[in-house]
Image (cartoon, rainbow over all chains, first blue to last red; front, side, top):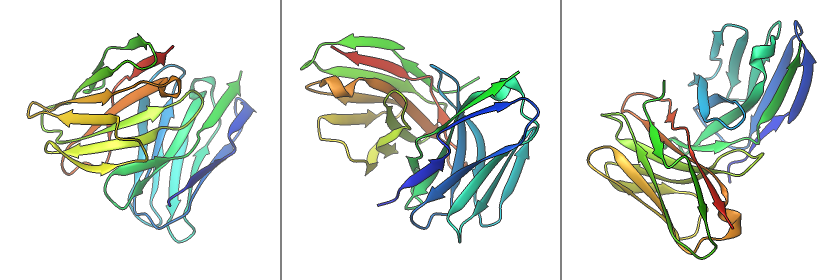
Length: 111
Length: 112
């Protein structure tokens, strides 16, 4: 059974600091997704990582994938308050576009 | 702006009742998935439809059922509602050749 674990589950940080969210998964998968969710809202796609070594960046967020280690990271550079949200990683089960999700990392960035 | 719309946005039902949730995808999005998200948790995969056929199911009982229609709309039906069914239900669609999913804004179901 595919399991996806995120850590930390909660992160409070100051503006301007850097931090990394980790996503580990238990079985082989070729596709990993990062999503953002604001309170009471739906899920916004951030990144789709499709191969080992894939790295994608958008603004202050950068995601990477190591399929051999079954690990993805979401790095936040010089955090700003607007990045406060819950971040989820999700892994494609059986390459059939059925996503298994982590529990989410609630990120609070203090001004 | 999302191309996936869900209705209703909020719904309150009584235990034992039945409910139908609706989702309208963008034209050409021939794959639709439904997820249940309990408060404070990650989404749980319910099932997926491709070209009107169910082609994947998560760990949900048969009282959760669905339909996908030729016009790219779909339904999630839940019979014999239980209190634990209270959650945000999300519909997500994907077009062929695109690895990412677009999520709707969700339906918040409360079972009392």
